[in-house]
Length: 138
Image (cartoon, rainbow, N blue to C red; front, side, top):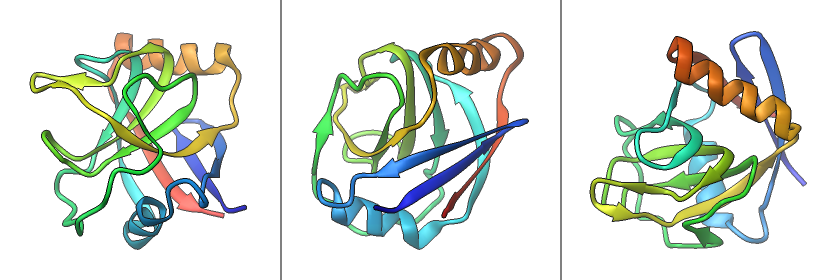
């Protein structure tokens, strides 16, 4: 099983990839790694953070292992079916949505982090703004 490494500010996390459940999504993500960007607090979805990847040119990606209601640390890849492209990291109660309504993102990986660590990360982005993020494959 492959893994991602997420360096977020001073923290480093790993995430197990769900290659059997979202193979096309994961292969697409691998094509643009390493990713260096900003992790921001969500605007519409509840207790979560996100990375805007709208500037990345993506191929057509099917819906696979998709959900509107991800749980703590279930990383979603959203290739822009109805809204901007992004990676969503839920840190608490989350309903993935935008001004276009509810969105279903492809669950590609699960972050190895405690609920407390996720809540702290989400609260930091809410209170102090975006954090640098670097995503690589291990």
